[in-house]
Image 1 (cartoon, rainbow, N blue to C red):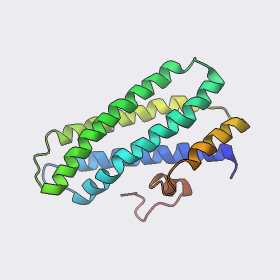
Image 2 (spheres, helix red, strand yellow):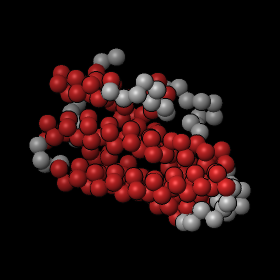
Image 3 (tube, rainbow, N blue to C red):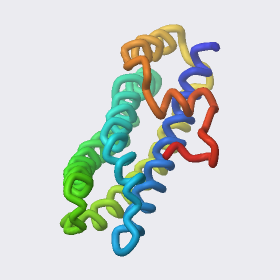
Length: 180
C-alpha cells in the first residue's frame, strides 16, 4: 500500500477507535446504576489508556510534524490545544482505570465519581475528535517522501499487535460491528 494511503488509513482507524471507545464509556456509565456490564468494564480497563497512548503518539509524533512542515507555526495554537486535551484525557483515563480496576477486583459499586469521569471523558474525546477533523483538513493532499518515511518510521516503532487499531486498519471488525 502506498505510504500516503497508510497515513490516511491510520487516521480513519484512529477515528473509528476513538468513537468506539466513547460509545463504550457511555455504555458503561449507563450500566453503573443497576446492571453493571462487567465485560465492558474489563475491556475498557485493558484498552482505554493503551488506545489513548496510541492516539497521542500518532498525533504528536507523526501527524503534528507533518502539519508543521506544511504550515510552520500557523497551526501551532490548534496543536497546542490538542496537546492540552491529550494531557487532560490521560488524567481522566488514569482516574477511570483505577476505579475500574478497583470495581473489577472487589465488585464494589462505590467507584467514587466513576460515572462522572466516564461521561466527562466521552464528552472531551468527542470534542477532541471534532477539532481533530479541522487539523485533518490541513493535511496535504499528497505526502512528501520524507513524510511517508516519518510515518513508516513511527509505524514500525509501534508494537506488532496494536489492537484494536491494527484490526480497524484492516477493515476487519468482529461480528456485531463492535470491537468490545
